[in-house]
Image 1 (cartoon, rainbow, N blue to C red):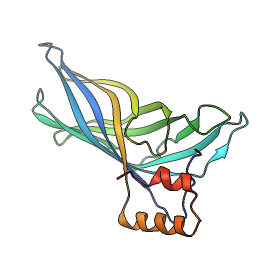
Image 2 (spheres, rainbow, N blue to C red):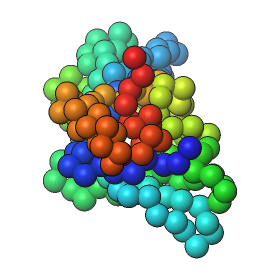
Image 3 (cartoon, rainbow, N blue to C red):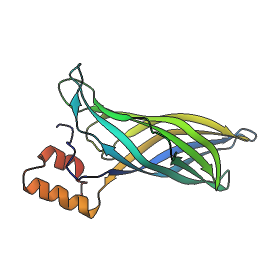
Length: 198
């Protein structure tokens, strides 16, 4: 299967997943693993080939939030894409020159961290990376490794992984995709990759 091509007038992909955040109270040793609900909006470019023969899709994150509630802190924790700053590029790269899949997807982002309503970290630079992907967007069997520790007062926090991604399409996107497939403007591989499974 090949990387999906960007469909004209497609707009952004929306991906929902779960981010595992580990919180440790350094005074008491109490530990908590929290699953944050994450939503990301991104735009994918057209595939192109590197000199090595491997194919690439450039990705730009347009919006991202991950939110959950900490029992230890007694407050919500939220990650948000930093507003008003140029976001670093992200990409999907084929792991070999002979086929687009398996592929490695790397997300790079500058983000802010809130505890309750208080902004505690600004413009943190983070990376999430998954290897061995068999579809773009991911279909739920992905695990993106994340390693971004930081400390707030007596608490040590670390985002560990983001997993279980599911792409969502608007009704307009579904109509465009179905029409494009019916008119044979959208290849079967692109249709299968973009249209969520029922």
